[in-house]
Length: 206
Ligand SMILES: Cc1cc2nc3c(=O)[nH]c(=O)nc-3n(C[C@H](O)[C@H](O)[C@H](O)COP(=O)(O)O)c2cc1C
Image (cartoon, rainbow, N blue to C red; front, side, top):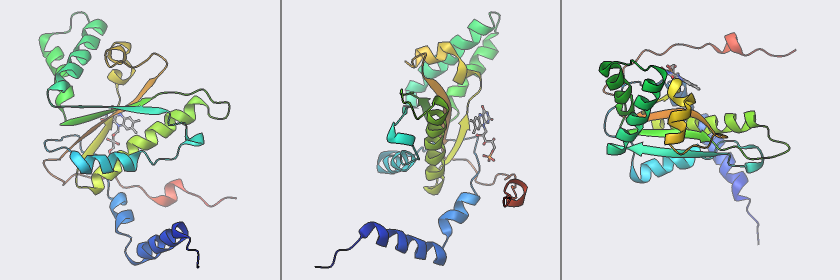
């Protein structure tokens, strides 16, 4: 019986397909962030596929040093409350307007994923690699969402580094928020893209 190496065949087919139609690569090169996002967010099977793609990111020793909190609908109110708690702790005289502005940030998209680096002890994998790996997942989720017709934007800022927000989200002091990935549908896809040139960043060495 002939033994077929399915994995090798799949890669060959993929490479042939890419040569003929590098659509997905061209689409990646067009990716941009969409800070304004509305309903609908990815859901159901599409969301599962997007997350599955994200979780296939490179991960030294397969530690899976990450976890993700998915926040949507009315639950965003609790996230907004945490943002306000942070603001009023930092700024005792924060006006109601400033507090309302902080709260509204939790409603900038219908779905928010909080990417958390949940570090594992490993002699060969320092924390920085685990943080990068978690970022890789977030990036892949954003890209996969884009491929599926959704917009995303990655944000950090003070709410990513706030002990108050972290504690409220149930994030351990030994863990880090790597980013909030806001997901939804942009009201318009027409958004300026800052160009990047390969030659500005990649050189042939030596
Ligand atoms: C780790 C990380 C943190 C970021 N934090 C913020 C942020 O807090 N606020 C923001 O406006 N953009 C933030 N960005 C940048 C946006 O996600 C986005 O990449 C940037 O606005 C450029 O737009 P583009 O992706 O369309 O080129 C962050 C990006 C990364 C990778």
